[in-house]
Amino acid sequence: MLGRIFERFAEQTPVCVAVRALMESALDAEALDTLFGQSAQRQYEQDLLFSTCVDLMAGVVCRTHRSVNAAYQASVPAVGVSVQALYDKLAGVELETSAALVRHTTRCLQPLIGQMKGELPPLVPGWRVKILDGNHLTRTQRRLKPLRDVAAGPLPGQTLVVLDPALGLVIDVVCGEDGHAQERSLMEQILTRVEAGDLWVADRNFCTTGILFGIAAREGSFAIRQHASTLSWEREGSRQPAGRCETGELFERDVWLENGESGTLKVRRVTLVLDTPTREGETEVHVMTNLPQSVKAATVMVLYRDRWRIEGLFQDLTTILKCEVNTLGYPKAALFGFCVALAAGNVFAALRAALRAAHGAAKVEEEVSNYYLADEIAGTYRGMMVALPPEKWKPFGTCDVPTFAKWLVQLASQTNLSRFRKSPRGPKKPRQRRTRFTREKHISTAKMLAAEKAKQRHP
Image (cartoon, rainbow, N blue to C red):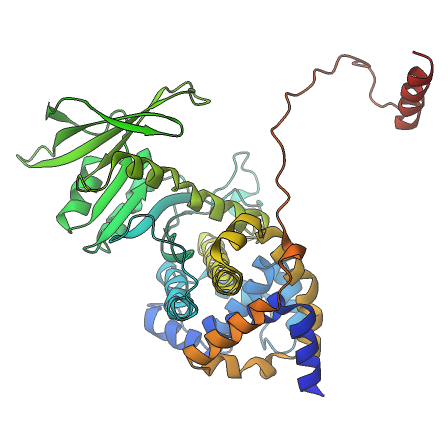
């Protein structure tokens, strides 16, 4: 009977079944508790396991439960502790433990995506591109006693996120509790993880002498937009034309950066002269890179443009998932929730990889909407977990990669992509000025429609 129920769900909603199986693989309870033991320095486990905290928070960030308390109520008495004990546990999750959770999901899902051959084409062949950006968590509610009389919005923290665009996975994250601090204050931890063959792409906020020299010193490469006031040089080559891309003319010149310690770094300054100015009125975009001349200026500029993939990730985490739980006022709890959302986002990335393997990368990337995928999962998940309780999914946590990958691709091939087609909107129209009834608080819509219909009948 259970086999028939499972097959029915697999036939009717294969994406929901695939996501639940991927979550069992990437967030296996035993592996998570082992991870906690390896990464936690001060916090300990007693009656409430780390894996239980992840499971409850995953229900919130995936929008199957409206709040942490709702997730707790749905799991009583299996949780085994009071709701206050749960909140206390979340408030104490250490930052390195939260970051380790994200890296753990990458280690689990990366070989699976490779086995399925679900990667996207590399942005620059021969380099492993890593897109870096920061994210400040939005203000929380003022539930904590020190915040109740504060008028300003309380910020619970910020993160630096590293995205692998070929895999679609967040491969690293650095968390900071000070939501008011400059993003660059967290960069030292990122620099220690730079490896030879990396190609780091970031916006101008990360274009400083220390960051560029730090990446180059570790044999990494970069393509980072120039900041107006954070670099210095006295020697530069002549500006040379470098062709054209779809948004303007390209130029480049060699520049020898100085770090104030008698050190120099030769880089290429690629300039895009825009056909149409940006919304801020800028007419030129400058990107600093130490890539060799074999990587053309147009490729460098396309590479920087594709930095927006990480902005799309943040948008999905906010609108599709619930990455910022504003009821969690304690910084560690809020950052833990954000990291669980990143882990859930990695599961979505593995699902898209399976769809690419089954239907082709171009079709999936151009047509499939993450919003409709998430809507399907949120609408089906709770009912599916009633029919197929958690213990029935345990085999997916220990399934070998080749077998699991083959099954996922087969399941993805059963998915009707037309159910999840994107609905692109047209260009925004200018906002119409409102000139009528400016002194009224309310009007009757029915009367306005009737007046418009009468006007059309008797112009």
